[in-house]
Image 1 (tube, helix red, strand yellow):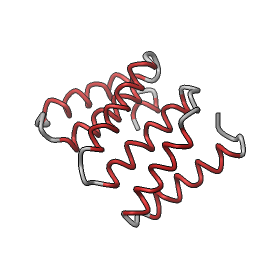
Image 2 (cartoon, rainbow, N blue to C red):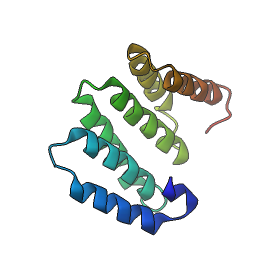
Image 3 (cartoon, helix red, strand yellow):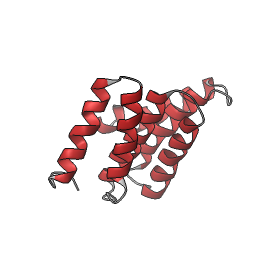
Image 4 (cartoon, rainbow, N blue to C red):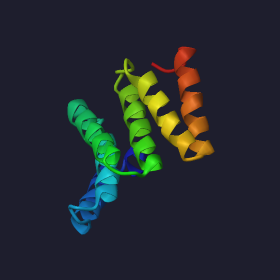
Length: 125
């Protein structure tokens, strides 16, 4: 992701273009935009980042796209870990795992299981 490589300005520009091109009624695009924007905001605006990620989860929950909803939950969990707010992360990972397993998405299910194990072992905080 561009933001992780320090290209924040470029990532913000691409996100703005992405948002402008999308329909306001396109829930899937809005979920992706909110998730990506939350990561950009994480560096300087932790509360805004969390709010955007939670909006992505809320939007995804209105659809029947289990993998999209699971990804939004996983993204929120990872963001909260980054921000040092791990309190609700186990439940978010459990919820994401449930959705991934219902969709038979074994790769992402394994990822959430691995994160959950690392968290339980104290490897993540």
